[in-house]
Length: 217
Length: 349
Image (cartoon, rainbow over the protein chains, first blue to last red):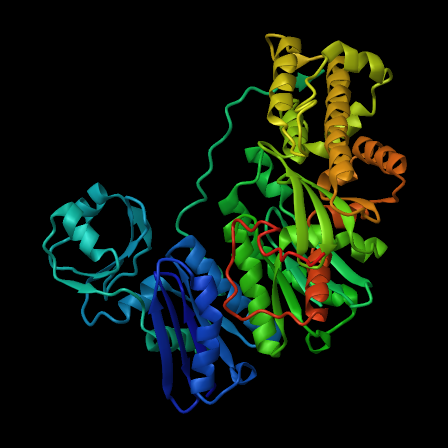
C-alpha cells in the first residue's frame, strides 16, 4: 500500500485529496471559475499536512486528464507531472468521464460535461458495451439520448434546458477524490494505467490568415 | 536557481548560480507547431508547453550537472504573456519547489529581460534600457531591482511586430525578424533604397519618448502591394531594398526616441543597454552604439541567447530578488498583464 495524492482541476473546482496507506481519506474542494493556479498548491500542501505527511511521503499521484476546461486540465496536469518528475513516483491519468461515472449507481448512465460553448462532452456507460467519449451539439444530443438513461455531470441542467429531455439526473459538479484514486490504483495494478496526458477531445481553435502574401522571385 | 520560462512560444529552463554563471540554458522552440498559422496560436502554445516543459527542465538539470537537491530555489515566469502557457510553467515551478521544500519566486518576464544585462555584463544601476521585442518596445531607467522608471512605450505595435509582419507579407519563415535582416543585408546601396521608398519617420518632432510602428507597418505594406505583380510575386531586388529601408527606419526611430530619453533622464545612467529579441538586429545595434558613443556612455546588449526568451534571465531575476530577501507564496497568480513600473516606490532624493 502506498499514500496517494489525487488532483482534479478539470471542472470548475480545485479538488484535492490524500488517501493514506491505511485507507484514511483527507480531502478539500473549492469551487471557482478561475484562480485554480493560485489555490491549488496551497490546498495540496494543506491536505498533505492534514494527513500527517510531507510531499516526499506520497508514493503515487492520480490526476484527471479530461475532458474539461483546457486551462483547468493543464493546471492539474502540470502540477502532477512535475511532482512525479521530481519524486520519481508514478503519476496515473484518470478520464473525467470514468471518475464521474464511478459515482453514478446505475447503468446506462450518460455523463455530460460542460464545454463552456454550445456543445457537450458526452460519454455513455453501459454494462454490456464500452463507448467512446465525444463532443456533441444540443441537436445531436437530443437525438442521441434515450429516456431510460440516467444523466450525470455538470452540464446536466443546461442539457435538460436546451433539449427538453426529462431523464432522471444526478448533478455531479466534480468527481469524487476516492473514486479517482480507486480507479487509478486499479489501472496501475492491472498495468492499464493512462499516462498523465491531457484528453482535450477538441482541437485548438485556429483561424488561418487570409491576407495575401507576396512571393520573392 | 532553476528558472522556467513559458510565456510565449518558447519552452525554456536554465540553471544559474548567484555568481552569474549560466550552467545550462535549454530552449525548445515551438516554431514548427505555429508555422502553418503564420503566428503564435495561444492554445497551441499552451498545449506544447505542457508537452515539453518536463523534458526541458530535465535537460537543464542534466546539462548543468546538478540534481534536484542541489537547487536552492526555483523561479518561474508568472506573466505577462499568454496565460495558458504561463500557468504551465508556473505550476511546474511551484510543484518542484513545494516538493523540494525550497523557496519559490514568480518572476515578471519583462524584468527578466530588464535585468539580463547584469547577468551577461554585470552592468551597474542605474542604466538606460531599451526593451525591444515582438511584444514590447519600452524605454526604462533601471534604478534598482524592482525599480523601473518607464520613460517611453509604444502607442501601437511593437518594433518586433513590424519586422515580423513585414517578413510574413514577404512569405519569409517565422519569426521573420532575422530573415528580414538577412534579406536587407543583400542591399548594396542603402542611401538610394531609403530615398526610393521614403518611409515615414514616426512621431518626428513630437515630445516625449513614446514609439509608434503601425504607420510604418502600413506604409511598407502599401509599398509592397504596389511592387507585387498580379500573380503575387515581387522581384528580389525590390524586396531587398524595401527590407533595408524598413530596417533603417526602425533603427532610426528607436534611436531618435532613446536620444530624447537620455536627454530628459532624471539621473544620468551609467550605460545604455538593449535587451529583447530585436536587440539582436545588427542595424539596430549599430544605431544604438552610435547614440551611446555620442552620449559618452558604454553600450551593451546581452548575447542573442539571452536576448530572445530564455530561462536564464528568469533564474537571474529570481536570484536578484532572492538576494534581497524576497520569496513568494505558493498562491502566486499567473498574470496576462503585468507592467514593470506598477510597484515602483519613489526613492528618496
